[in-house]
Length: 320
Image (cartoon, rainbow, N blue to C red; front, side, top):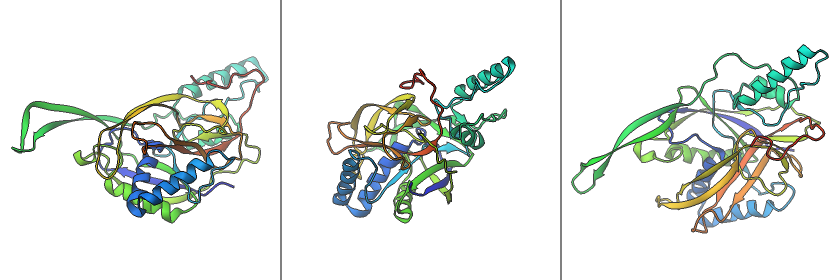
């Protein structure tokens, strides 16, 4: 049985330097955990995650994972979930459903109703309204001479951020809601993502409520609501890859520790797991930097789905 799922709504009070992803947010929660309970407690918690990755279920004594941040009530479009284009009894109906399938495949984000229809194996009702999107904003910054307190000549630079005036939704799955929210509140207080000292990543917690997802007794797949790196038992299916690289924060003071490039499965990836479906997917990734203590929390929240598997259908890399 899956741990409870909670819907968290945030308001952005300033732009974020990059869209809020499940792995980056969990990484910030690791540092918050360390700040709250110490380095030894964090290492013990990570060790539980790593040990459980070789088993059939995610079984650390304390579990938490997030979805990507989504504008309003949108969901990632599940990959590989086909509209039943062969159900039509007439040629015109088959053509209509085939066109609908192409329309679904072009969309990265869909409404909640369309998402629920797709995971139940139904033909989705797509909205003809324009869906809200992230706004790309640019701001000018200057490099300061810290001795003189003045701007260095010719050292103006532009920073690109992401912003929306709509509520931002996160889904949190955890077996200890109180502890998870204690950790998340530390992250929110400090700011989400990079550039916090320059005014980026400031958010306000609007509300939190437990979310009920309809049970699917015949579910045979999981839809990832965030980004992650699959474990050995997360299975095969349809996915899209994203290469992620950048810098890590190695403690309470930021130092420029470079992360090696990683290939992560994007939100919406749909896999047939070779383990019980417990609402989590992905793993803790080690060896991503020359500093061995740095890990990537490439774990995310999943939703069970019913997927029609057609004979001869290509699955691995279907969305690449």
